[in-house]
Length: 435
Ligand code: MN
Image 1 (tube, rainbow, N blue to C red):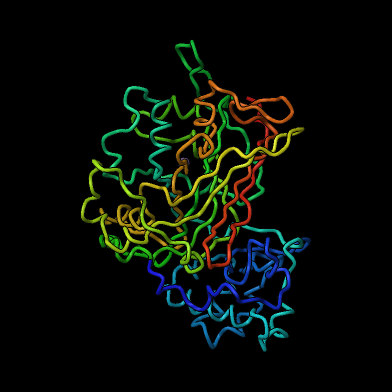
Image 2 (image 1 turned 30 degrees about the vertical axis):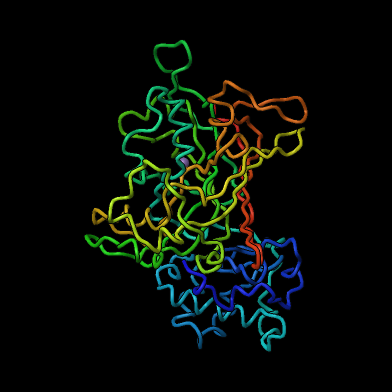
């Protein structure tokens, strides 16, 4: 992505007539405008599409009739209870919608009176799943995470020889994707405990989080027709936070030879606001440089524009809120360090002729960087439970306990641009069902 694709919607000095959008601490200035689906508290209405600005939500369903001149099919796309129909359209329409919203919401807009009746306080809204993904693929794009995790599961061969050639991923479970704030039930499953020769069935004893980003896809592709890497961003609608809850004991017992299954499928939590590919343009950076000696990506995964600007500098952080202890920052790392770019994921996933559908979701894989403060899972932080993490109240953790709340946050900053945030992706661990 070159700076020439940054446009007037990214101008850092633009203000909104919504005062909270101009607060220097807001995650949602007028330069962000992430999309979500909400319903008003104490109302049984189905979800409505909204855009976050400051501490308000703009109800786009209510405004659809005013956007008809700018947006083809606005009435259909914006009154749906899901973002999937909007995701199904081309980036040209997403860009037109963003420009129209900036005109409605910027300071001095003549349309303030038109928009005001369609503002909802975030505090009065319940956020819903922005789209129900038909497909969910979790990648493994951080080489630091792959190496750290691999060294625990396979000490003699932490990084398998395919890693530097293939953006490794697996087909995950879409039906258990939940939005921020949904409780996460500790799964029961088969696990082989230390010193035992056969497994038992019971609550996971090694429940973990994974600090990831989710990528919502748009603009369906056709079965049998790979998406060229140069066209991949035409299919990326936006990015959210994603916690790939992982039961390490179930995972370790079941994963060979076919990969993750019940150790992952019980729950995945995403943040409610999707920060659009448009809003992320100022934060695009070069793909992470490969160390000398690493192979170049094969031709279908190698594109000069992607190498020059296919990374995204999103700084993601994970926090543990344990009862009686101060919130603990578990780790923070940037998606700019990932070994594989979003475009390489799209090109790889479709390279065999598999299609993608609007509303499909990718997880990047756990985002870990270099150093002890940049790890994205307890598996890595505690070295498989061998080095407990100390909390402020003298308590400690190897893995998550019932009642623990795990919170993901993220932020983009670049000199000369308005910083933007992602909101939160929270989940509290509920006790396992009795067996
Ligand atoms: Mn994962």
